[in-house]
View 1: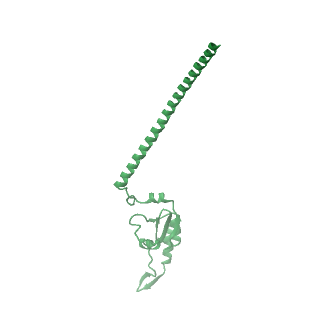
View 2: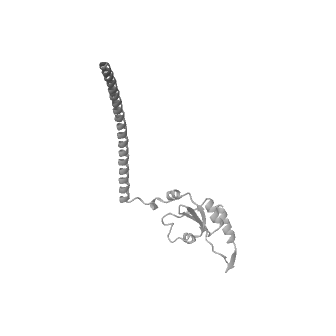
View 3: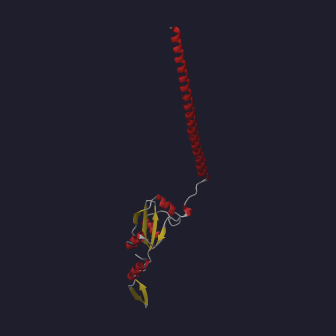
Length: 179
C-alpha cells in the first residue's frame, strides 16, 4: 500500500467534523501513522503506529532501539504494507539471518575489538602460523627421510647382492677344491 493511499484512508476517517462556535474541528485528532521496524537477527518486527514510543511499547522493549540505530522508520516493502494494513499490530517475519542483521547495524553500534582482544587475535594468528610452519617442516623432514631410506635400501640391496655373489663364488671354489 502506498503512502498516499494510507494518507487518503486516514483523512477519510477524519472528515467527520462538527461546528463549534463557527470553527470546524475534527472529532478525532489522529496523528499520521508511521511504520517502524527492527530485527533481532532471526525475526524482523514491524509495526505501524503514531510514534516511536508507541512502537517500543508495541514491541514490549525496555530500551530505546532507535537511539542506537537498531530500529528505524520504514517507508516501503512487504513489511510496510502488512503493518499499514493492521495498525498497532506487530508483524513478525523471518529475517535474513544474524549476519544480515549485523551488517544492517549502524557503524557506531558495531563494537570495535578491545586492545586485549586484538592482542589475543594477533597472538593466535602467530601461533597458527608457527604451527603451519612446523607442519611444513615435519612434512619436508618426512620426505627427506623417505629419500634417505630409499638410498639406504638400495645400498643394502647392492651390498646383499655383492655378498650373495661372493658367497656363491666362494662356495663354488670350495666345492672345486674339495673334489
